[in-house]
Image (cartoon, one colour):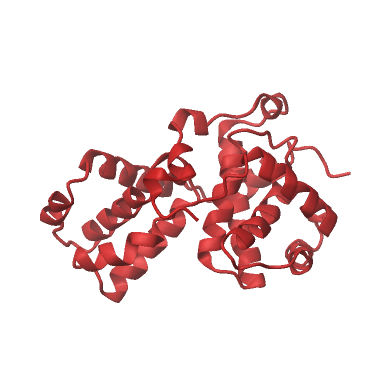
Length: 254
């Protein structure tokens, strides 16, 4: 695992936002819109979280798995790479990459248990192993992922936000950033700082001088903060229904 973000493959793979928010031609042909694209990725991120809870792997594994999935769909279509198989396969691959190996058998078991009546989630071990090879190829075998969690606790202490409530708020904000594509666009320490900025405003904690000492571009930090807040504002009450309709546009599992 690379020790320095700035020399890692993760840094080299950072993308412009417009290239991340791009629906592949095959998906467009099936009527999948940009909104559908974002909803499906968010749904699969939640799905991986549920699976991870059942098979007992750490949050870091989930974050890595979500990053893999989001990277895959900057290169491959959902039509060819079924998200309902890509999601658990990314979790399986991430668990190995993060040295928290989990076997395919419990993943397959809980896939069925979570979606008892949905045959679209009925995949076998061989399907996961075959998809793993396709995902590795799509990722060019670049599996290194740095996360905001790595620097978060120290930054919170330095900012004077080391109390339990501040940690809880900021940690939750970081978790929610994986429902977006921020990890593909911004260095993880800037995502962490954006979450701390939001928490400091919520807690009415003056961190202006602290941020100045860090000598970071506050315009970037504030822009990321606004992206996070805009995401919360955009969430709708009928999101599950819209996601189901989006998933119906994908090819049916044979």
